Length: 163
Figure 1 (cartoon, one colour):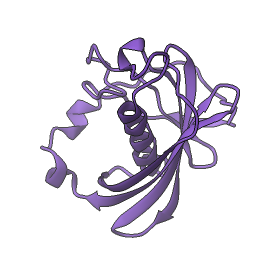
Figure 2 (cartoon, rainbow, N blue to C red):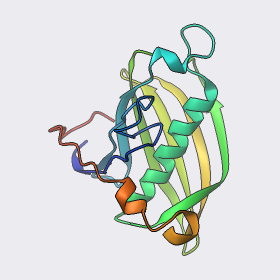
Figure 3 (tube, helix red, strand yellow):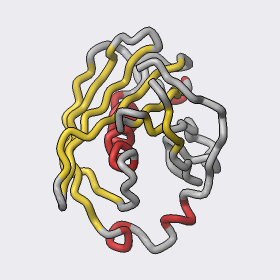
Figure 4 (cartoon, rainbow, N blue to C red):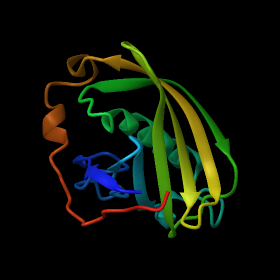
């Protein structure tokens, strides 16, 4: 599927932060179907049981995909997670490239709902989530420095992703 454009990376986010030494530095792409996609890899330091990523970090990535799907519609505001239901389908390995997808399934003036998925690169579903968010003014979530936190646009010439 065609990549329309790329979202910015932050400074310190555990998932996309370019200045955070513990971050996986995940890129996020706006796709032609209004979904968001990421190709990323969890490091071994995110292990739970041997050869598996910790469920909390899997959940964090699903939440990020669901939230960033909002931005794939051209929205610039922020939202806070209200509820998140995760299903762990298969073990999520570390040190392996993975594919994440997030998409909006309902959008009102105050709330939105997303679905998010993590797949192996050969399209085996590993985990998925249904997530509800409340839209809030940026100033009510964090200081006006939010735009300062999201300065990085990393060009990587990704134009198409098999989803």
